[in-house]
Image (cartoon, rainbow, N blue to C red):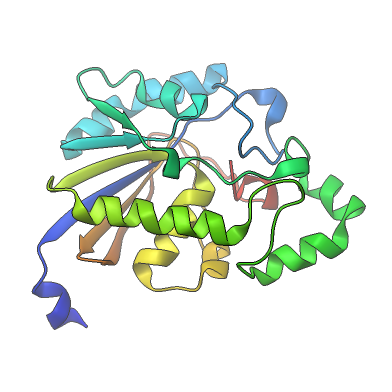
Length: 216
């Protein structure tokens, strides 16, 4: 494995989760819902300037959702491209609900989600297969970029799915990774394979581990 990786030109992928979104929706499933940052989130975004510039990304791609656009806004001088494949999964009727609320009202569907079959669809929302196709497209975009360092501003669910893709893990193993608000996850890419070199690099230390922060 390592010999095959060494034959590929290394590329660095910086996956930035957006800063904390509006406080009224914390601990809710927020996927396609387009909300902005909280006051604390805006402070987090401002603190990222020196961290991001340290890596000197040659290209920046960003989810079209407001919480990502507001996160990258303080980084003046970095040209940003909108990439729709980087948007969070659409939870459908689960949007703006907590995990406990969903578990109590629809436990059978929650169990189906846990199986992570590509055929599963969030009620009234996105099918997992379609979400994973978007992840594969985004991964191909990163691999084909000529720049050596790429920054992607996106969401926790997308970052977890990209980690599974590049590390060769089954998508259901996304639960192995906790991704904090306003944090960098760093991968060294060798063609279509990746080596995880950094997780939760940020200027803040926050414990956000819970079912309802696995995505947003």
